[in-house]
Length: 174
Image 1 (tube, rainbow, N blue to C red):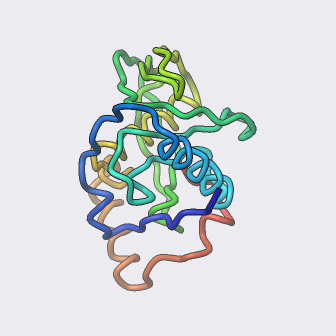
Image 2: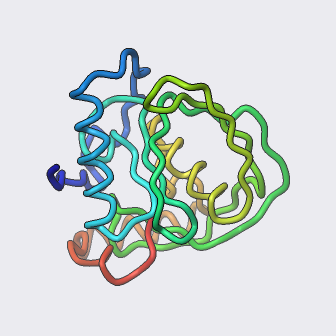
């Protein structure tokens, strides 16, 4: 296993739509293991393949305690409801945090690594993580979902100060 380089804000890989995962190969299993190690190394609770420069519809997400990790292939939100606003950060935009309004609950369909269809009904933090990571698969960053004034403030700060390389180690980020 290896720790992969997390792509940062401004990298074009973060803005591209990912392609569906086909066959599960030993190489794909190695990518999942590397993504899991990278997520833990970055002290995150979710990571999407595009964040490490891999253009596949693949995410790894930890449970709410950050212990068990689940790889989801081709995840899609098939139902959602309610609305809740909460603070978010992102491993690809270290040091930036802002309130994001998302669905209070989601129903996600995906495939497991062994090809089994999965349905996940999630609320709370797990719902937020799933929405955040699935957004990455479509080239959407959390700052695209914040108030335009807040987004402009974050962009100005990044332009002026750059990205903090160590920020993910000191604050909660997805």
